[in-house]
Length: 214
Image (spheres, rainbow, N blue to C red):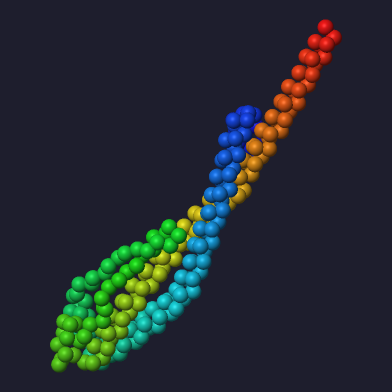
């Protein structure tokens, strides 16, 4: 077998037709996969640009929550803050996980009601609680919302990245392996068929010549 051709391809017109059909399908698949790869890359870049802002917002909010938590700790004491934190953490979170499809890739969409509660819903008495504790709780609840959004964006980027890599590998396989081998095989079969045709023509000519001589 010649290098860069399909093994077992016989030099027949039926085989040539099969190879031509395979080549046509491979070239069509290559074109469609390139379009899908480009669509995935554009979506990844668009989402990536927005992701930077989401990361900055989450980091800024977490810093703010940390400052207010330390401030409350300094004012009322760590024991009191820990006790109030346990009371405030006893809650049910209702998250609705759905997905949207981008170029055939499912990406998560997390929806939920507002996680920021009014002070009366946090499980501790307002009269005996310093305002700094309420503010720290507010900052933490806001941080949780930012982190959920960040998780959604990060998961989407991971899914897009993985699918983009898989699509790139398939495009490369078609472009640098499958299609060249099919083209080489097609060329080799045609050359062999031409040789056989010339040989048949030469034999027929010789038979006619012998017949004339006889």
